[in-house]
Image 1 (cartoon, rainbow, N blue to C red):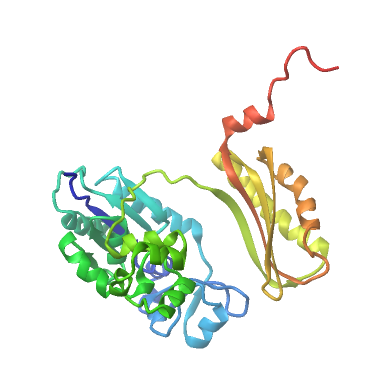
Image 2 (image 1 turned 90 degrees about the horizontal axis):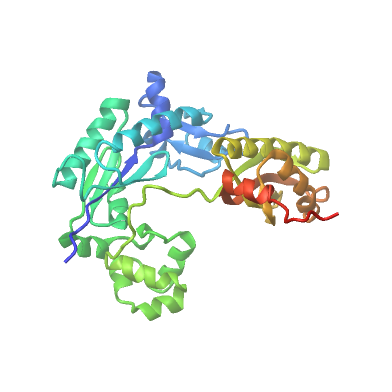
Length: 363
C-alpha cells in the first residue's frame, strides 16, 4: 500500500501590502492598498488586512476601494522588490525539500513526504518554515498541511493571517462535507452560482450526486468535482512549472481611438515582451493581440508561424495584420495586450530559423 503523502501549502499573508509595511514602518497598522491610483482605471493588486476590514479586496477597481476606505494609503506595485523577497523565500524552502512547486511569487506547494531533515511530522516542518520566513524577512505566512494539494491549499487559507491548519486523512470527510462550495478548487463565481441553482451549497451536497450527474451538469469538470468532494487529488508536486506564455497588458488611463496612439502603446508592450524573451532565451510560435473596447467588449486576434517570434522585429512585423482584423480607429479602446505563446527554447529557435538548405541549392 503506498504511503500517505505529506503536502504543505505556504501562502504569504497580504504579501505585496506586507512588504510595503515592512519597508515603511509608519504604514504598519494602517490600511494599505497596492495597485492603481484611485483616480485612474487601475485595480487593487493587493491590500493589507486593515484595508480588507472595510470590504476592500484584490481585483476591485481602485476608485471603489477608495470609496470604501478613503483613509487608505495607495502605493504603486514594486514588482522587483516583491520578486527579490520571493526568491529569498523560495530558496528557504529548498532547505526542507527539493520538491517545491511555486504557484506565484507568494505561494508554493512542498512535498515533505521524504524531506531533507528526516522529520516525520509535516506539521513540525510547516512550523519551522513559518518561523524561518519570519526570521529571514520579517513577514508572516500561513500554511496548510494535508495528504494532497487540494486540501493543503484550502487549509492554508482557513486561519489567515499567520495561521497553521492541518487536515489529516481521518478528518478530511467531515471538513469537506461542511465546506462551502465556493471554497472548492476549480469552482469560480459562475460555477458556484450554477451549483447553488441545483441545490449544491456544501461538500455534503456535492457528495449526493453521482459522477454522471455532475458530468451532465458541468461537463468534464464534473468528475473532477466528484473526486474533490471525496478528498481525492493525485496531482503531484511539480518542481518545474513550464511557462506557457509571455505577455504585456495595459489598461489605459483614458480611451484612445487613433491608430497612431494604439501603435505607440503596442510598441512599448512589444519591447517589454521582447526583453523578457531575450532574458529567458526563448521565443514562441503564437502571437496574440488583445483589445478591450470602451464598452468592455474584449476580442483577441492570433497568428501562428513555425518560424516563431523571438525579437521585437518579429512581433512588430505581424502586428499590423492582427490590428487590421480589429475595429481599431473606429471604436474607443480601453485596454491593449500582446502575448507570445507556444514557447520554444533558443536552440529549437535556431534550428527553425536557420535550417540548412538541401543540396544542390536552388538557383
